[in-house]
Image (cartoon, rainbow, N blue to C red; front, top):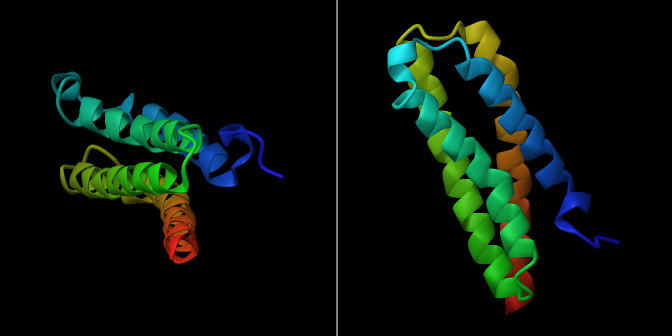
Length: 121
């Protein structure tokens, strides 16, 4: 039984994702500190934050809405990772495990959003 957002595997995996994104962006050029580095970190942090906030709002409708925001942030992060690879800030091999984890989080979010949509009707 899920008693807290901390019990949700998607939240746990998204916390892992945040850690990996912070580690990855440590190597970015200093001139990107307030650019791509900041954007990627904020998008990553937004994922578990919205899962937690939505889970604790009380209604299924609110939870679904916050999951949609988390999903959008995950897609934003995916785009930013691709940009960082294209700019040669990161080796594609280093971004691969992060992309794998991000894909897993996206699949989980999508399934949860769908389940909440189906059970609404």
